[in-house]
Amino acid sequence: MYKELAIIAPTASGKTDLSINLAHKLNAVILSLDSLAVYKEIDIASAKPTKEERDGIIHFGVDKVNPNEQFDVIEFIGEYKNAKEYVMQNNKNLIIVGGTGFYLKAMVDGLSKTPNISNRVKIEVVKRLSNLEKSYDFLNSLDNQYMKKIKPTDKYRIEKALEIYLETALAPTTFFEQNKPEPVIKDLKIFQIETKPEILRERIKKRTKIMLQNGIIDEVVSLEDKYTRKPNCMGSIGIKETLEYLDGRLTKIELEEQILNHTAQLAKRQRTFNKSQFCNIFSDELKNLENKILSMI
Image (cartoon, rainbow, N blue to C red):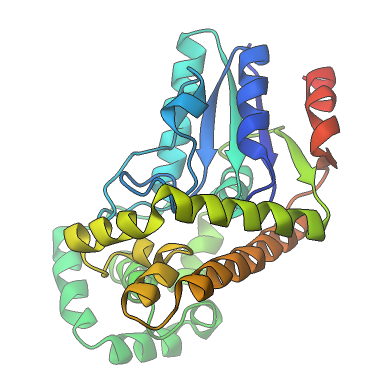
C-alpha cells in the first residue's frame, strides 16, 4: 500500500529542499501545492524549483498550463488523481507540498459535485452575464446567504451560481445542502514547518534578492509581451510589483521592498489559514521535521 503525506508552511520556509530530501528517502514523487508554480514560463516569480533542484524527483502540479489558461481547485484535484494513479502503478509514495493551503483543505474536506451544464443553460448564462450587476442582484434576492460570500464583481463565481440555479432550479445553498462534499483524500498526515516570524522574514528577504538577481524583471516583460496583463496570475506577488516598476511607479529599491513586504504579508495569511483550517498537524522546526516525518511514516 502506498503512503502519502503533506508538508505545509508559509512561503520561503524551506519546503522545497525538505520535500526533495524526503522524496529520495521515501521513494516518493511530489505534488506541488502551489497555485503559481502550475504555470509555464512563471519560473522566477513562483520560486518553483528548477529541474536541477528537483534532483530527478518527478513533480506533479508544476508547469501544467499557460498563464492565460484556467487552473483552479478542480484542476488541482485532477492533478492529485493523476499523481495518485502514477504512484500506485509504479510502487512509489506521494508527498504533497506547498503553501496553497486552500487546495489541500478542499481535498481533505471534499467538494460538492456540481451539475452537468447543458448548452441551453450555458447560452442563457452568457446572456445574463452581459449585465453582471443585474445578475448579482437576482442571485442575491434568490439566495442571500450564499451571495454574501461572493463579491458583486466576481464574474466567475456569479457565473457558477447562475449555472446551478438555471440547471437545477435550486438556489445554490439548497443545492449544496443536498449534495454534501465527499473527501478526496482521507487519513492524511499533515506536517508543518514552524519558523519564527523574524527568521522567515530574513528568508523572504534573501529570496527576493535572488529573484531580482535571476531576472524577474525580464521574466515579467516577456510574460506581459506574450499574454498581456489580463490573466489572473499577472496580479500575483512579484509580478504585479514588477509591472509597477516597469510603469515607472517604483524605483528598483522600492520594487524589492514591495515584493518583500507583500510576500511577508502572504506568509502571515498562510500561517493563519493553516492554523485555523487543519487539525492534528504535526509541527516542528525545519531542522527537526525530517527525522520526525521519517519516524512516523
